[in-house]
Image (cartoon, rainbow, N blue to C red):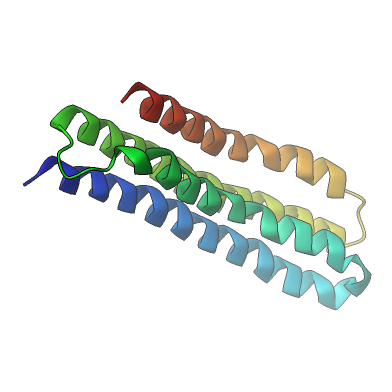
Amino acid sequence: MEPIVLAYIGIGLMVGLAGIGSAYGVTISGNAAIGAMKKNPDAFGNYLVLSALPGTQGLYGFLGYFLCQSHLTAEMGWLPAAGIFGAGLALGFAGLLSAIRQGQLCANGVAAIGSGHDVFGKTLILAVFPELYAIVALAATFMIAGAI
């Protein structure tokens, strides 16, 4: 196997896992929004924001690819390939898990808003915490790409 193959496997994991997590996360919170609209259809804007929030991790995975793209060459060595693979694992799994958990958190906020509670701002604040770990993984990817 050539080193570039390992690097592209890392890129695939980075983009794929983060994207899968976002798809799950927005579906979880979107499903809650559908249910909440039956009770309180006037809060659709709040539901929309909270449902879209878990989608950012997929964007981080895609951004990670652009951070590493200039290092993907046919003659790259094993060390840069391993770095990109490791960054792909870190960002992919951090994006996967944080998006799913963020979707669950946002779904609870959506349900509460649907029941008439004024918790939109507080839900946004709490939803930042799972997002933070995807951002940390993206920052690590940036640092790895800079060190290659």
